[in-house]
Every structure is written in structure tokens, then in C-alpha cells.
Length: 314
Ligand code: UDP
Ligand code: MG
Image (tube, rainbow, N blue to C red):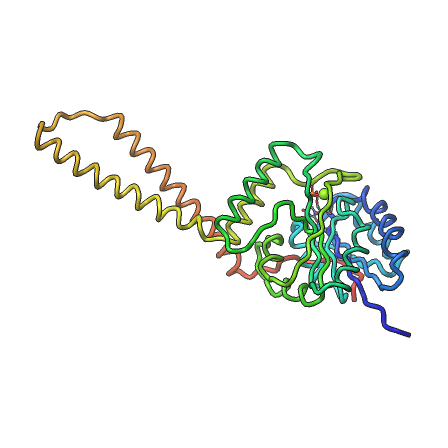
């Protein structure tokens, strides 16, 4: 019998008790059964859910031996869950997708076909619309991509999802980046390889709710910038130089004025304004440095990216 290629599907789950049965059914119907020319393993990562996600996973694993699950000791975040999934995936092809059906399962067939036919290593997806998303969030997202593409050497694609299918070699490369603060959108671009982009329209979540608050997204954006650019560190240098130059010019002007007209003491408000402004800027610069120092500190401690509590993966 000919050996069928194995496809690993990695799916992080956090409080997805309501979503998982729907997800499994959709996968069964649209992927696992129709694509008989492949073997599949579904790697579901329970990222410290507080609802009944784990029992649902155990039940699924019992009824279908292609279902592998791994449960964390607490919530480590989606990035850690994806890392754990990639690490445990044994497939010739590895796919990462969300379990809320916002990543259409029927695209998997298309992805596998492209990988088989074309000379590419990775098939990634991007949303071309942000329908159903708050306007302000879309505006911030677009601003984020503009900023990060300007200051980072790594290219970031607007609307790129984590939903992608890659060859074994790409997954191995991603795993080699053992950084503690993970920003997958950047990591996938950073490792290179030939990537084909598929586009699709935004689909709304089928059940449950999004885990992203506005602040969580803001933190995520800062994470991306700090992880893939050191440009913010140079802001202090730039602004510092400009301010020093201006101060020098101002000093000369004051000396000249004092020599011609004497020195009438005035200007208390402007002094206060300048002091406050500079104080604010110095604190901002310290904060920026702090972001980098904190990440260096976390990385140097070499803590594991996740801790697993229970699994059926051997
Ligand atoms: N997720 C996770 N850990 C978290 C938050 C989210 O594993 O701390 C998973 C979640 O279960 C889902 C995916 O990451 O499968 C995407 O989450 P969500 O749908 O809330 O994000 P959105 O689609 O709104 O970006
Ligand atoms: Mg979602």
C-alpha cells in the first residue's frame, strides 16, 4: 500500500466548549472524509480553558483516534498554544487554524492542492475585508501595519491570518525560533520560504465570543513592534539630538539678546512648559527602553513557553 502524506492540523482552543463539537463536525464533513488521499491528525491544544473544553477534547479523542489533544496547566496564550501544536505535529504538512470556524475548513483542500502543484512551501491566508469588525478597530489595525512595515525589515501583510498550511521544513524553521515573546505573524514572515497568499472574506465567529479586547490587541501590537524592530529605541536618539540642537541655537540667541538689550528676567511659564515637556519625553524614552529590557529579562530567564498537564500524544 502506498504511504499517504500525513497532514497535522493544529488548533488552539481557549474556552471553546460551545465551538468544538461544531468545529469537529465541520472538519469531519469538509476535510477529513472528502480528502481521502491524505491521513490527518487533529492537534487540539487546550490553553488553560476555564469552561468544559477539556472534557469535550477527551471525549473527541475517545471517539476518533485522529484527535490528539494537549492541555496546558494554565492559560499561556494563543502563541504558546500554536508553538506547542507545531512541536507535537508529526505531519508532512502542518496547518494552523482557529477552532471558531472563522478560518473556512474548505480552504484546506485548496491549500493542499497548491502545495502539491506549485513550487511553494507555505500557503497563507489573508482577509480582504474586515466586515463585522468595529470601525475603530479596523482603523487601528491599518495604522499598525503602516507603522510596522515602515520600521521593521520583516514584511507584515495587512489582514494576514494565522491560518496557513506549511511543509515540514517551514514548521521546523518556526520551531527553531524559541523566543519567549512570540509574534507569529512576524515569525512566519521572518523564516522566509516561498509563500502563496489566498484571500477570503471575513467570516464571523460561529459560537462563543472573541477573546480579544481592545487593550489586548493594543498590547499585541506593541509586542509585534518590539519583537521585530529596534527603531523605537532610536526615537530617543533622534528627538534628543533635535532638542539639543534647538537648545544650542536658543542659547546663542539669548546671549545675543542679553548683550544688546540687557537681561530682563521673565519667561517663567515657558520655562515650566519646556521642563515638563522634556520630563515627559525622558519618561517616555525610559518606558520604551523598559519594554526591551523586560523582554530581554524574560528571555534570559529561559522559562518554558508552555507547561503541559495532560495529553494523549505519544
Ligand atoms: N485562543 C487561545 N488562547 C487565548 C486566546 C485565544 O488559544 O488566550 C484561541 C481561540 O480558542 C481561537 C483562536 O485562539 O481558536 C482565536 O481566538 P479568537 O477567535 O478569540 O480571536 P479572533 O478570531 O477574534 O482574532
Ligand atoms: Mg476568531
